[in-house]
Image 1 (cartoon, rainbow, N blue to C red):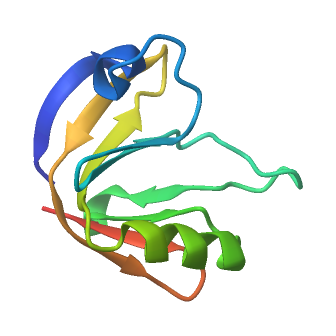
Image 2: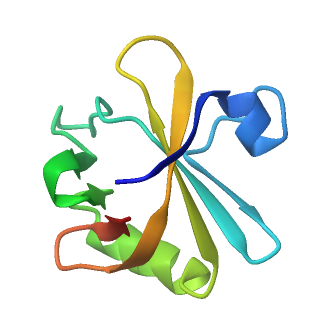
Length: 110
């Protein structure tokens, strides 16, 4: 998987201080801020990154939300940022494609 940049602050990526959502849409581009440790209301993991397989599942188990989100942004270019294990810094990874899967939004990384 190809890392494009690292040690990025969310503020730099989102272009706004104090930005709280997990994504930011610009003209034909959506930037995804992924935290591997994020849990849903039932304390279940929300995002899984399979580093050896170069793919990620995001918003696991939120079928209706995923359909709405993907439907809204499916024609956008995706930029994928993963929060490092420690601290609040992100790394950007190159995206090959993304699509709506059965259990989550799937992101295939280069």
